[in-house]
Length: 505
Image (cartoon, rainbow, N blue to C red; front, side, top):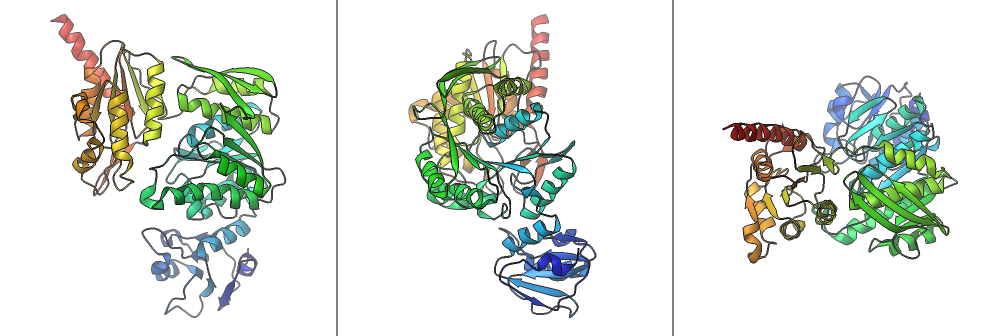
């Protein structure tokens, strides 16, 4: 495709030294530039692409898209000057890949918690109908039969549009994607035509290191509906809204104002998909819902209070697109678990071990409520908080953990540039003095997991929270391999063997 064709629809641009060459690709990372590429210089949180223009040109870029002109540039390099290179990136990507989101059914899921599990549920429902769906989210990106480990929950617009194009080539009819607040704020979903938007929930004290205030965080999530879903060219658009969220009225009001049809889920009497009753059992969740004066019962293998709402989202999605509920039921029973979400680790021990991604106070509370419903003899909780992230949730998580669990081991999560001991002090600050005998501090996460599991006896439940599916730990100067699930398995095996030896003695 010629350069003129690709840049012709960029808004508010000025073009210098037009060289109408055959474009071989687009990149915003200079290291990925090849011969006859367009390089789009975007400003990130750490780096500014404008600083790497010369590197991109040396690697073969014949056109640079910029928001500020470089002082020196070869005369044969085309410059496209724009107001916003983030928007320009999505514009050129869409033209180059022929607007793939217009040809797919695209579902975007946003909220503090539940995005990943809801995406897995909806993908399984679609699969059960006989159609193919791609998946973009926190754990991995799934395109046809190919899985790619995730780097960002919501990728940059160029990567996202390229993936959607690949999904079409793999005969996918649907694309299911998690939409993070960072992805919305950083315009990574520019140019994506959504069919459906799902609002799972929203909790304060999350991502405030980035958004600064809860109001900013809230309105960034809302923008997904008021801008991106509203401006989508799709004729049939739906919003699915958790009516039990404290801020559901704001989302409902703005969907009405934007002319978006919405379906509510939850316990509230006005809910379209109304939760009538539920049971959390060792083998899964059972939920009873009311829809248009009819009762339906669904069983699933995934467990936990938060998953009740994730299942409701799946039912609402099926309702919107007239997918029979018997297909929904089959899909629910197909999902054994979602990696790192209420995931049981079983190595033949006589106590439970659960690994979960819960890393907010709201998620931790729901996790422990779900564990309590299994009626364990004791709950032993192991958790920490991430460094370089909002500090205000740390004392809240400390208070919730020690009040709801029988014993807590406070440890490191991903400390990043912070001192792990200082993070632990922040967590401790929320724990009432009269509960201080209910916890211990073990900064080394591997040791903390081992010690926590060694305390467990028959009928107990060890809960390892915070990192879930992650296979790494981010320290100050290095990222190391670390998987809570693998560490738990090793600890269980070793402790079982030691107990056998003690019995023989």
